[in-house]
Every structure is written in C-alpha cells, then in structure tokens.
Image 1 (cartoon, rainbow, N blue to C red):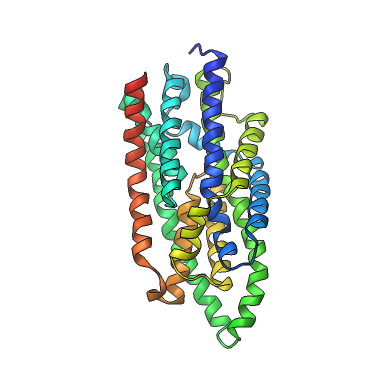
Image 2: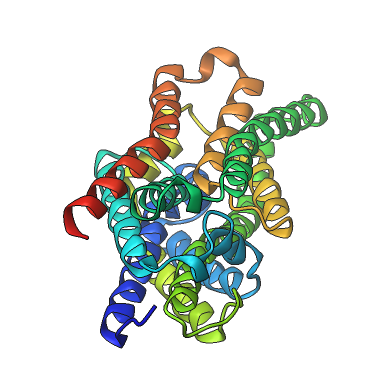
Length: 329
C-alpha cells in the first residue's frame, strides 16, 4: 500500500496518543494501593511509576508482535492504515469516557475490540484472524480469574503467618515493602501495556510497506516508552480513588498482597507474549485480597460495576471502530 509519510505520521501520532492516555488511565493500577495506604506520597508514586513504566517498556517486544500480527495480517490489507486510524480513534474515545467516569476499564480490551471491529468492517470477516483474536481474548478473560485466586491465596497465607502479630506492627512493615511492590507493578505494566502501541505502530509500518516483518524498531520502543511514561506522570486521580478506596478499605498488608499478585500475573503473561489487562489484573487481585480479609468487607456493588465495564468494552469498542470506519473511509 502506498501511504504518504503524513498519513503514516498521523497514525503514529494517534498510537502514541493512545499510549499517553493509557499511561494516565492505567497509572492507578500500579500505585492506587500504595497511595491509599500512604506508603507513598502521590507525586512520588507517580514519578516512580513513570520511571519504571519507561524501563519496562524498553525491555520486551513479544506482546507487540502478538498485537500487531495475531488479529490481522498487515501485509494483506490494502486499507490497513485506514483501519488503524479507526481503531485508534475508537480506543481513545472509550479510554477517555471511562477515565472521565472514574471507571478502571481496560485499555487492552478497548484496543483489541476496536482493531477486530475495524478489520471486520474495513476488510471483511475473512481478514480477521479469529484464532488469534480468540487466543488474546482468552488471555484477557483468564488473567483476572488467576489474579483473583492468587490474591486470595497470598492474603490467606499472610493472615496465617502474621495472625499473632500486632496489626500496627505488621502494617508498618508492609507499608515499607509496598514501595518495592508498587515499583514492580509499574515495571510489569510497562512490559505489557506499552507494547500494545508498539504493535500498532509496527503494524502501520508493515502495512505501508516500510517494514517487511513484525520486528519492532528501537525508535518505536523509545517513542512508546516515553509516551506512556509522560502519560503516567500526569496520573489518574479519579481511577486511583475507585481502586484505592471504593472496593474495600486497603491496609498496607492488603496492598502488598494485591500488588505482588497482580505483578506476577502480568509479568508471566509478558514472558508468554500474551497481552493482558493490567486493570483487570490489579482489580481482580484487590477483590481476591479483600475476599480473603473479609468477604463482606468488599463493596460488591462497585466491583460489579467494574466487571460490567470489562464485559462491554470489547463489543462497544468494536462497534465504535466499525462505525468510525464506515463514516470516514
């Protein structure tokens, strides 16, 4: 496909804008528990998250290749650039809406749903790699269930170990340990989420004939890592409030358990080249930890609202991307 440098530049701009929004949209995932327990001051937490996001984003590319090649083959799409524009606009719109409402929805779901919807409408169902799409969706579905289970088990183990210790002493110790787990959570967020924009940019380079394979150039890694780090530095206070206070009252030991559980799930997925939702992982781990602490302590109404958003994000993003493609291309 013969694509002008200006159109390609516009796609890259949209992809980096998505990454920037993803940064402040999903910052809460990494630092909500540490901020709510006062283990870290908000500004310190955000700057640490931005730095660790940047480092994590530079170190891997397996998820980028998965995003860029598992839903459609960019080399076979004559209108791949138009499809990507519709995809990114739809994903950005959904991210901004859920951020404004303070709902921790999944940027990953939004992007995956939008790309599938845009390919379906723009190139036909035969150009959607349904096997790859389903494989990604399965990872997005099972990862929060695993995070919930791990969070529950970790919290139960910690309760058993520290049952006879003073709650004040225990929480004082875990407040310090939360600094480490918040950094780890931010690092794993960068290893997985930043790669999604990298995958889209690489998709654009292949479909425009400027790359032959789905290999992520270094400049793409640096651009995506920088964009996400800048977005992270802005923060997402609406979502931090939801994650850190509205699900259940989080104490340092709970925050530690939730962070270490979610980080293990996200990093395992990165090593397996699977794009997962950092939002789902940390929210589910918080729910699991809260259930282990005391089932009635979890505000299940808020949790239910979050889960509903999880289920509707992919179809809404897909339909929105399809409509945008129909209207403008």
